[in-house]
Amino acid sequence: MFCYQCQETAGCTGCTQSGVCGKKPEVAAMQDLLVFVTKGLSAVTTQLRRAGKPVAPEINHLVTLNLFTTITNANFDRDAIAARITDTLQQKQVLLRQVSDQSVLPTAALWNGSRADYEAKAAEVGVLATKDEDIRSLRELITYGLKGLSAYTKHANALLQEDSELDAFLQSALAKTLDDSLLANDLVALTLETGRWGVRGMALLDKANTEAYGNPEITKVRIDVGNRPGILVSGHDLRDLEMLLKQTQGTGVDVYTHSEMLPAHYYPAFKKYPNFIGNYGNAWWKQREEFESFNGPILMTTNCIVPPKDSYKDRLYTTGAAGYPGCRHIPGGVGKEKDFSALIAHAKRCTPPTEIEHGEIIGGFAHAQVFALADKIVDAVKSGAIKKFVVMAGCDGRAKSRSYYEDFAKALPKDTVILTAGCAKYRYNKLALGDIGGIPRVLDAGQCNDSYSLAVIALKLKEIFGVEDINDLPIVYNIAWYEQKAVIVLLALLSLGVKNIHLGPTLPAFLSPNVAKILIDTFGIAGIGTVADDLALFFGND
Ligand code: SF4
Ligand code: SF3
Image 1 (cartoon, rainbow, N blue to C red):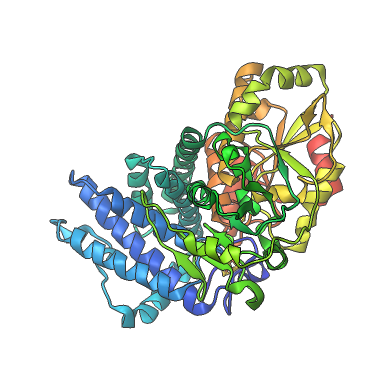
Image 2 (image 1 turned 90 degrees about the horizontal axis):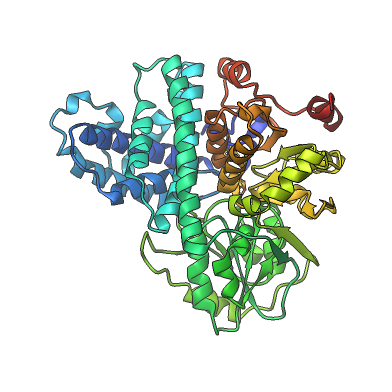
């Protein structure tokens, strides 16, 4: 196997024996083949669109769900992934018959095989199949961005929002990663185009979430526990949470969020459920301890799954793109009502969660809430009470070096405000960092996709302060990444013209030296140093 798509890749170069995440070679192989056949299908749909033929929404959903399935920590179930390959090949064969000139298609579009062929084919089509390291780097950078974009699109689709132009772009870009006639310059341009569509994808999801559930608002979220049995929901899918909340009414079972599901508490629509208690625990990588002490069933709606301990494996359920062998999967596609009765019955047999924390955390600072506070914030900037905003969005992870982010947050000057989104926040959202004239020093917009809100806020401030360039605002960017959703967030910020983003705790292994140089020279991308050095760098001249 060879996989280097996440920040924790072995030796900062690539996982070759087994994944640091727990992905086994046989799962990596099926993921490689799933990406390959999805690219093949995308070449076919792109050709059909070129000929003016329509592509059904179900095919768009298949593409996005396939890519989502291959995101880090989403799906470890080899058989489930193989089944998606089979389904994709079948759909592709049907569409292929509508292509009049198949000679223009790449080999991935024409390949077909049965389950017995999958291992052998997978070995030919992985990341290393592209020999030139710069082309490989750019193809993977684009593919990972598209994986992140697929995840966000899938969530929007679950709320019945569609953007067929976005799907058409996504598939054409996937097809272009197969095209040997494209040179490095073409792929650099495609990378930036992917970022532009990333903004559009996040805007689509923002619209889907806020139209369905209202605008996030300032909310205090309990982090202690009640005395009834509970179900813990993790991942990013708000529609799944909504169905679960409805089905648990009157059952005597409570619902708690974990990791990236925390921001659900900020939405008005979820506040009406009396059994929606609070958030339990921290970022994804602490789940082996926290799922154990939760005592009840856990629903993983998306990444990040850590291979479970036997002590709670029978309590772990997956749905959507998520999967783990031996854990029960709750089926249901777009527009379908999922049946969570098995989890509810399971919860009733369990003891209530064991308390691991006490108190509250505050969040809900997505764009509408921040706009409502705009006068106060602008006054604080004008008076000098707030000197700078520090965007610290992105992912958390288990690497020891990530203690940097907690130390950095603690060491920030008191006249700075952290803007956050994603599970990166767990490094500092429980610290007593105080407030500035009533404005908390950590403003949490929501999940990683709500980084969109941070961009919208930056654009609003640009307008209010009348500056020409987004980089003239008193905002600095110190972003943590782990998996591929952070890649589309990064590309989206670059496409909006944001410069000098610091990215850590390490730069992606999939950036070849030449590609890294382009990002450094063009956008001022940099890694992280020590807390003291970086503070001097960000605030030295103030
Ligand atoms: Fe390694 Fe990350 Fe790939 Fe897992 S997702 S195999 S940890 S690079
Ligand atoms: Fe976290 Fe996995 Fe990326 Fe949505 S839950 S930010 S790492």
